[in-house]
Amino acid sequence: MLLNIQNMWGTIFSQSHLIQKNILLSQGNLSSNAEWTPEVSVVFFDFDKTLTTRDTLLPFAFHVCRKTKRLASFLTLIFCYMLLRLKLISNKDFKSLFLRFVINGITQEDLKDIVSEFENSFIKNHLNRPVFDKFREYIESGCKVVIVSSNFDILLENLSMINKALIISTQTDYKDKRYYIKGDVCAGEEKLKKIEAIFGKRIFEEAIFYGDKEDKILLRAFKTSIEV
Image 1 (cartoon, rainbow, N blue to C red):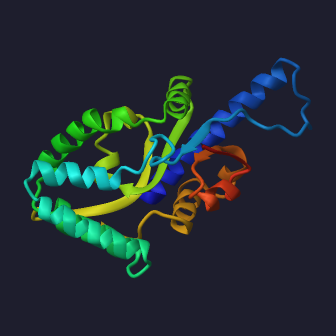
Image 2 (image 1 turned 180 degrees about the vertical axis):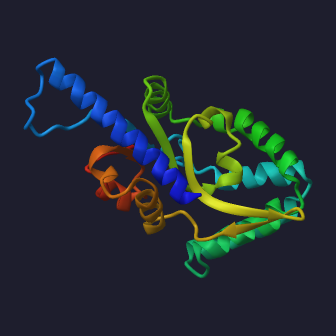
Image 3 (image 1 turned 120 degrees about the horizontal axis):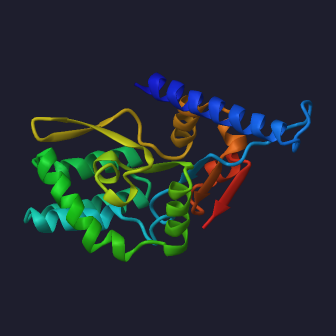
């Protein structure tokens, strides 16, 4: 699957850049031996605290637990979050506990409905408007827009407001109303690895990345990066 995505986006990249270069040559705007830098055609965005003004995972947990009448589970998760902040458990441990205490027992169809309610009641009221408007401008202009986030696929892939973007996130498996983390959490170096695996190293020279101060690795990796 990963290889197919990489090949697809690699083909789009190569053809798009070749067409743009040939147009510039035919118009006399570029010499045949000139160094050519294509227009930006791929833009990356972090999600939490970039497209939104705050982290969404705990508010999402509260929304789910209130909906499913499991507020005791939310209090347990808060305790787990404290352990994470104290570095007594890993990010992957915390996210696994999130799935265990908050999400397990919910069907995929019911979860889609819960996410839709959360999108309307919370996320739309906590958008980072200038950045989200820029996100929509890139979409409308035909750019390939990618969201790379440590948040879960079960949240991000069910948000209608970003459904035209490619999502790179923490992946989950689902079986018998139980959810499991698939692979590693998509954070830090893992974000970098996933981007490179899909797009190749060249992407860090050609694309733009928007992220918050916690995305130091990607802010440094991309030649053009914007901290929001």
